[in-house]
Length: 248
Image 1 (cartoon, rainbow, N blue to C red):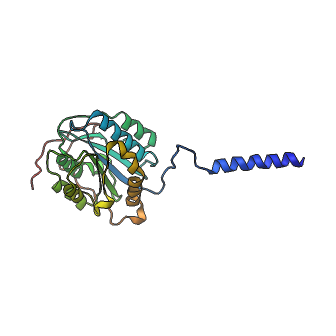
Image 2: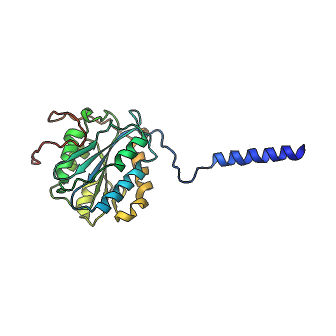
Image 3: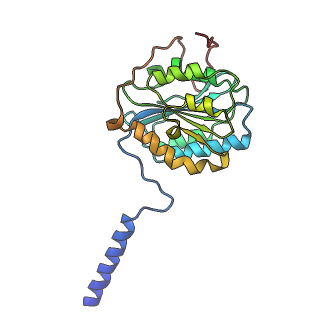
C-alpha cells in the first residue's frame, strides 16, 4: 500500500515537473505588446535568391512568438524594388500561423533598389487606417538591406522618424555606416545591426526584445497620429503605387 502510494506520488511529481518546464523548440507567445510593425524588405535584383530566402526565415523566426490581432501586434511588408509594392497590409493576417504562411509564400520581385520611394510610400500611405494601421499605437519600422540604395533615403526616413516611427536597420552588406547610423533611430548602437545573412539568427532575440520594449505601452510616449493619404485607391495585395517626386 505504502509502495503504491509512493509510486503514484513520484509519477505525479514527474508529470508536474515536466509540464512546468519549457518545451524544447517552442517559444512562449508574447503578451502585453501592441503596435504596428512594418518590414521594409529589399526585394531587388541586388539581393540573391539565397539571401532573400535567408531573410524570409529570419523574419519568420523574429515574428513567431508574437500574438497578432487588432488588440495586439499587426505586421506588414513592403518590397523595395523599382516601384514599392505591398505584400500584405497590417490587418490582412491576424494569427501567427497565417503570418508565417504568408511570409513563406512571399516571392522576390527583383528590379531596382529604390529604398527612398519605399520609405516615402511608407510615410504617405502605409501608416494610415486605409492600410489597416491603427491610431495611437507604437509604430516600428524594420528595414532589412544589403546596404545599397539607388535613390536618396535621408529625407523620407527623417520624415518617418518625425512622425514617431522607431526605425531599426539590419544591414547584411557593408553599407555606409554614417548614412545608416543617421537613418536609424537613436542611439544607433541599439537600432543598427551589421550582420552576415547567414548569421541573422544571432540577432533575433536582441532585436525582438528591442521591438517589444518599443511596443510595450508603459514604455511608450505620445500617441501616434495617422497621416492622411495623398492619393486614393484600394489596398489590394501586391499593389504598386503611383510615381511621385521625392523633392521638397
